[in-house]
Structure formats: C-alpha cells, structure tokens
Length: 113
Image (cartoon, rainbow, N blue to C red):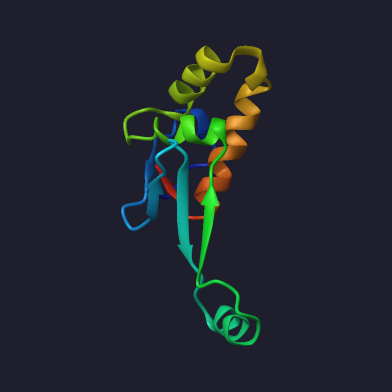
C-alpha cells in the first residue's frame, strides 16, 4: 500500500499475512515460525548447525494483541482494548503500540492497510 505522508498510523488496520506460518500452543501462547532462507543461513546451518526455522513466542501483551488482529480492528481500536485490559501497565500506550505494529510490519508478519 502506498501511503501519503500525512496518514495517521492509528487509523491503519493490520491484517496477519496469509503466508505467515504461526500456531497457538495449548497454553494460549502464539508462536510465529519463520523459515531461515538465503545463502547465509544455509552456510550457517551446514557449518554451525543453526536451526532451519526461528520460533518467536509472543509475550502476554503480544498474545492479546495478536488475537485482536482480524483485518477489521484499527490500531487505535486495538490500543483501546489493550488499555481496557491492562490499564496503567500499558502506558505509554499509543507510542508502544505504534512501535509494536511497526516491528510486526517490518518483519512482514502483518500488512497495514
């Protein structure tokens, strides 16, 4: 999506990428599985036995937010739900949630529209 310079990040709607491999453990924890690709990873795998995939387990806040990403809730709506559940522990809320979604987007876990 091509964005204008004057967009408000809180108005964007995140969607989990359809080609992303992830699962939910029995405990409810979300685990994102990323396959390590490329020549560097292949060499490291052969020489040092590094794993073929990286597993990223989300923390309590990440799990809560992940389940709210449905392609309908905006970042702002998700932030309000985080504030309702965690209150003052989530502060500074908007800065943290925008940074979190930027990290998810940069790692190609979500698409913002």
